[in-house]
Image (cartoon, helix red, strand yellow):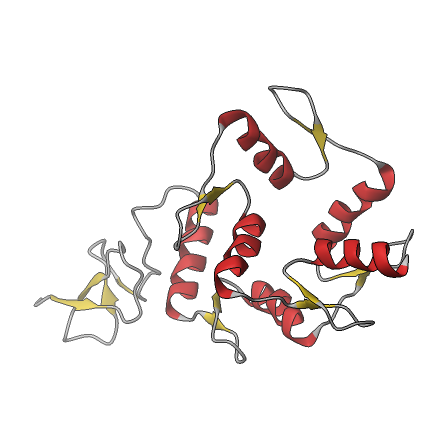
Length: 203
């Protein structure tokens, strides 16, 4: 009989998609004897079930990214998008049982709880000082290494923290976003505003 190689539609990359078809029959010939129905193609490049699941999931997300309708930011899954949408809606459903403060994510709540418990699990290997957050430890370690990754684009002065660079940059722009409600005086940082209010109004 005459055999024609027919590709299967919607095939995954890496899959052997060719099947042998006998044009004189109504079925598919698999080369082992009688005519049978087409078999589901297998991806030969993947050996484990976990790898196949991850491969299929990544293929889906590549083709159909989950895009925020408000800011057009894209995410790898619908659950990540749903979490992001809370930043637009202001929804904060995770509440601290001690002070009542609300958070977008449970991870943020767990991190906040260390402020009440005093737990500081992140220890500096150089001086032993403890921190409640890994990011705070990373910033602290720059005091030991001398690293200052945040550099001013105007005067080249460098800082260990991004917040320090932002406040410094206001020296060049003249921006003073923190204004006193009592006298209207404006300041470069909230720290300067609080110091002013305490010294003048004893707030």
